[in-house]
Amino acid sequence: MLKYLIMRVLGIIPLLLVVLVIIFTLGHMAPGDPIEMMYESMETVVATEEMVERARARLGLDQPLHVQFIRYVRNVLRGDLGDSIVRSRPVLGMILKVFPISAQVGLLAFVVLVVTGIPLGVLAAVKQNTAVDYFIVGGSLFLRTVPVYVLAPLLFIILVLRLDVMNVPYGWKGITHPNVIMPTLMLILFPLAVVIRQMRVGILEVAENDYVRTARAKGLGERQVILGHVMRNAITPVVTSLGLIVTGLITGSVFVEQIFGIPGYGNLFVTSLIQRDYPLMMGCTLFGAFLIMMSNLIVDFVYPFLDPRVTL
Image 1 (cartoon, helix red, strand yellow):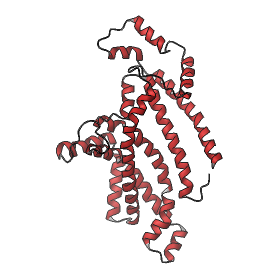
Image 2: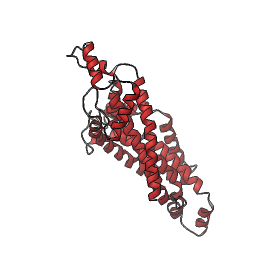
Image 3: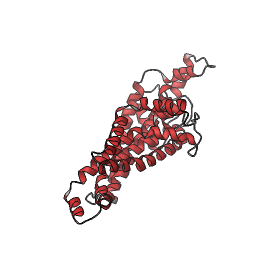
Image 4: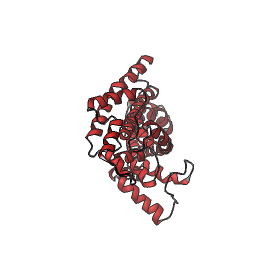
């Protein structure tokens, strides 16, 4: 297992280099001059051509692209993601400041997703071809087909503005404040549909195996058969999806954070795109890619505990 761990960790390095190349290329292909946009955001400062060139030289933007890329990779390997062009602050520090906010909301959403999605998927499978099954499957199909950017504002308008069911202040008040309910709900809309469907399909497929029929023939109750024999194998594909889903939830939904004014990772990333702050944009993208790779690594190690047939 130790050898596998070392190989998987080493395998992340070339993937990160590929991501770095893509991020760096796309960042420099984006339209607009970040230095000019920085001065345009300063309403009290009238930038001269000399000031723009001096700022560009200070940030190394006047050098050839390959020189800039080598310097950027070297800095990343030292844990330095550069400084924000607009805010003149370390990118890594800015990300680490807002990431805990997104992580709190994301982890809460993940817990809600697991404790609702998996049981609903199991219930739909057990009650196959009944009204309960049709209701759960129909609801999950609706969540999968309707875009989140349509459904989220619709729920906000109905529950908050029309029915006044929830008082949702704008901004971040902490994980224990009631205003976290709506962002959490909207974060799990699409993932909930995915988990329900995968869990239902997995239960129905595994239930057809011979060892499950044997367990029933021995007189075991349906609950014992499902929990003791079926779920362990049926949940394996769900774990794969959850590994990717949790990363998306933790890094924060861009749309949800924009709606509720949550100063999280997603909001910071959108700001970097709008302001053409490509050091911040590249740092946010690289940070997200690293989280995805680590979540995949964790999923690989969880597999053997769920399915003894899988070995590392």
